[in-house]
Image 1: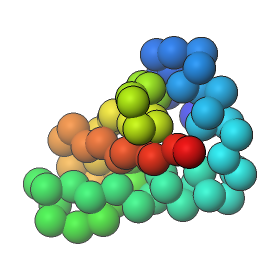
Image 2: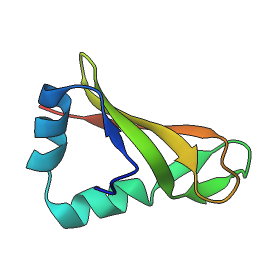
Image 3: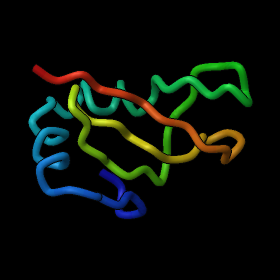
Length: 74
């Protein structure tokens, strides 16, 4: 995780780090940006816990608009 990224909850971070590094990298690079109408990389993201898993909330690497990526967990 980049030092520009902020963790909102310890438990959410624990779940994020339980995902293999290669998979985390793929998830970071597979985020839909409605402004770019394309798949982009998320940057400067926060990790938040939800009832279904975690959500990465950050900005698009291309246009800097807000983007999010949900990650469902068992």
